[in-house]
Image (tube, rainbow, N blue to C red):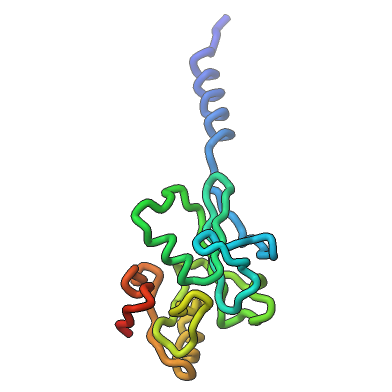
Length: 164
């Protein structure tokens, strides 16, 4: 009688590994309510107009922001958490200003209009769009320029410095 133990152990090990492999956490945007305060300034998020933001972590925690400016102030800190799973901002090309929670886009892929004539609740607005064409239409009406997520710097976020 032959025992095929080594092959069985190898197959069993493969199956256990395949079934327990960690899958990437892909969160969906969370609804914003009056129970949510901004993680930077503490303001009730839904009490103010303009684009909002949220950072989701791999452990399920969420930081919410009353403005894209506060989101970027938080994100651009040298000690920001490293376990970020997703970042969302409102898509202002599609969002109804009265119901912003319904249209979200990936913040790292969005096109931001910086330096226009619209101010956010915390100062300079970074108005996000999922489509570059929508950002262009916004610029024709309000001015500014398009920047990507990675181009936003702390200098741009300071209210006393305006290098539009």
